[in-house]
Length: 141
Image (tube, rainbow, N blue to C red; front, side):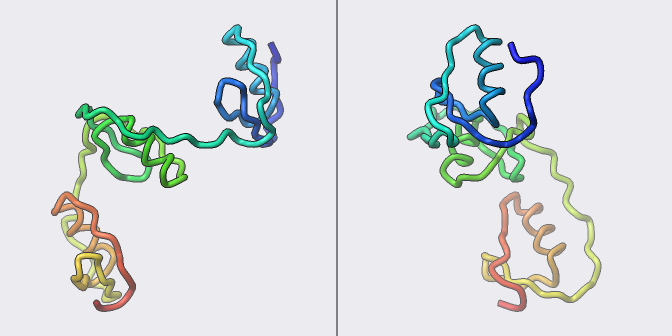
């Protein structure tokens, strides 16, 4: 097995359907798993998103700050949005809402159609409501 691999990023798609950062890392994985993994392409593997996930409630939260019903839903969201979302934890995160915000007046319009005094106020409202209120635009609605 290769003892060390360069840190260069030249993704390859292995015959096992996984993307490796470079060919050396793929060979190392092949050796470690005692499997014959070969290069199927010198590009990242195409993302094949799971069509649907089982309706199992085993809550997790991702690095994107969102809650998911299970790990499959998190992976599906990462795949369909083509974003890197990693598992940040299991269960629901304990969210401490800001108790108060500075009185800065830099209004933002929430996707809920309400004008908030500043970003802190919209985050506070989101946290207290238990749902994400996104910023539709800066300024009043």
